[in-house]
Image 1 (spheres, helix red, strand yellow):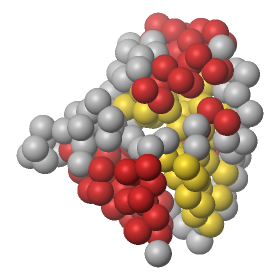
Image 2 (tube, helix red, strand yellow):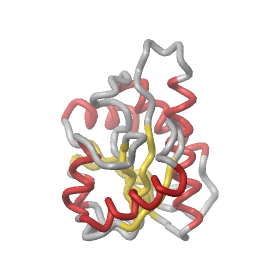
Image 3 (cartoon, one colour):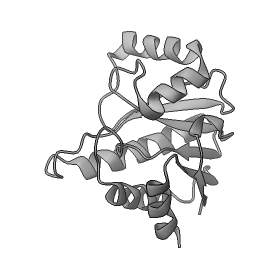
Image 4 (cartoon, one colour):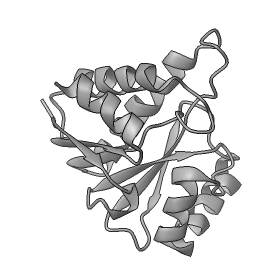
Length: 169
């Protein structure tokens, strides 16, 4: 089983093999963690995202793509598009689970042994934070027995950190 570590930090400072970006479908950067990763990682990340956009037209909700990490301490950035919360009737839970599973599978394809996740969809996409944390934990725990040996849940804010801390106990 992968070791799960909870951090209250800025994901752009985490030295995991892979950090996950809560991206939007355009892959062109945005606010929140997406903007922070693009700013800290430099132009190489945006250039790689533009190539993916040109080849496949962006990234659908629940899926993930991988790029260089640019100037970040990670080796790669996996960009995943979380669902916008619409009350839970639009398959949001399954889409969020797919974000985590797709990211883990993609990390394995590049031989990663460590991965850091932000709180996907809980910001401007308004996914309920506790529900999102439960999905994140369950999906990561179900992924055991593969090459990923270290999973970091990186919470930028105290509220998410408290939720994850309670679930980790």
